[in-house]
Length: 396
Ligand code: NAD
Ligand code: MG
Image (cartoon, rainbow, N blue to C red):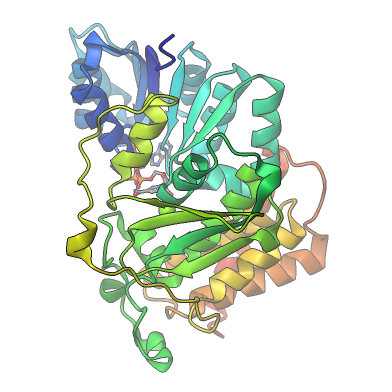
């Protein structure tokens, strides 16, 4: 029996992951093969409408209500419904679809993903913030409703693939790799002078500015370590990060018999997206094939904690759990805004996050057992407020 999806929705269709998903869906036959339920975006309504027409979607949703008239105009005569706002995003996630791509950026992606899981859908999860802020809630919801979450990040897809047919109880360690980012080889003392433009250049991956800066600081890897802990439900001590400048080995899984299963592939997100789209089958994907003889060598190094303090902070977050992930994510976002706006140095970002985590766990204790949409939102806004105050105090 073919288990590949027939009906799909793409949340965050106009973004980098969304565009790659659209590309794969169109290459596979577009509306001939898939029934598209919902496509969503934010302010780029022209592109959203174009995609919705190409896939003959049931509904296109813009996150911004002010963009609804423009979306309606762009969809005139197409037969595609137009909708707008947060509630419309959740309503779109309530519509029956076999496979749902969660590729909205930020905490805004959480509620639609949760709604899809409550309906027992298969959720292809790119949105990092969901697992980092509310991993247990997401995983418990999936289990309670017979839903499945397929990871869409190169590292987590690699681990997932290395684990196929294996017993998680036989796993000793999970190693995720990191390129080391733009400043891997810089002298440490120069980091305080790093500019936004310098931090926005990635050695291997073409991605948005924010995630590229998060790669240089390894905040991105810190989020991925937390995601690994939540998704695979392994002890934090079993998760390791390895600097691998070539970005060809995405992850490795070590088993108790000493075997280490590595996943290699070109740095192209269409692999992880395509794997999730076709799972459990493997379809032909338009990604580059590796010529290892030509590549010649692969190199690995342990990450230097002084260069990448975000990795140490991830360990703290995993030890506290509860609302610590939400605070970490929000403080990181605010610190990144501060760096981009020129109000904070590059190393100052980790300083802000560390201070916000320390103050909020001292004030309220973040390790509460039950997390809900409400207390997540409260923790998120308090962490942003506090980060703003720490940045304004200019001590970092
Ligand atoms: P992006 O910024 O390119 O696209 C984000 C999408 O979300 C767009 O469609 C945008 O219109 C929409 N959006 C933005 N704000 C919104 C809001 N408030 N409400 C609803 N929709 C909104 O981001 P991306 O790079 O495609 O990443 C999406 C997610 O996937 C992120 O969580 C990111 O961390 C994760 N991810 C990305 C990559 C990558 O290579 N780009 C790799 C792994 C994981
Ligand atoms: Mg990644």
